[in-house]
Length: 151
Image 1 (cartoon, rainbow, N blue to C red):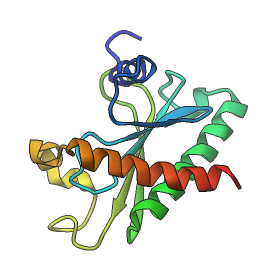
Image 2 (image 1 turned 90 degrees about the horizontal axis):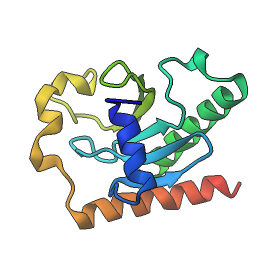
Image 3 (image 1 turned 90 degrees about the vertical axis):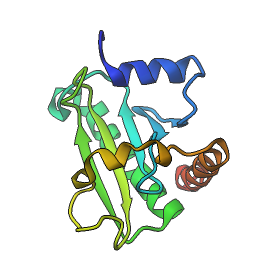
C-alpha cells in the first residue's frame, strides 16, 4: 500500500534492512520498538494490510490473535514487567493494524496512565537503543519465543 509506514517496515524486514526485526510468525512480524523509553516495548505487525480485525478472514484473525498473545507472553517473560499494556492501532499513515505491547513497571511514567501521556518524550533520541542494547533485547525476546513455540 502506498504511504503505509507499516508496509514500509515490513518491506525493510523482507529486504533484511530492519535492525529492529525479531522474528516472522505466520500472521505477522515481531519487532522491538524503535524507542525504548519503556524497556522491552515490542510491536507485532500484521502481515495483512487491514484496518480492522473483523476485516481479516476468520481463520487468519484467530491465528493473529493467538500469535499476538504468544508474543505478549514472550515479552512478559523476557522483560519481567509488573503489567503488560496492549494496544491495537492502525489509524495513522497507511491505516495498517499493528499491536503495541508495553511492559509496564511501577513508576515508569510520572503520573501513571497510558504511555502516550508521555507525549514527545516517548520518541526522544536518547531512547534509541544502541546496537548492543538492541541485540540484547532481540536475543531476550527470541529466547522466550523459542520456548513458547516449542510447546
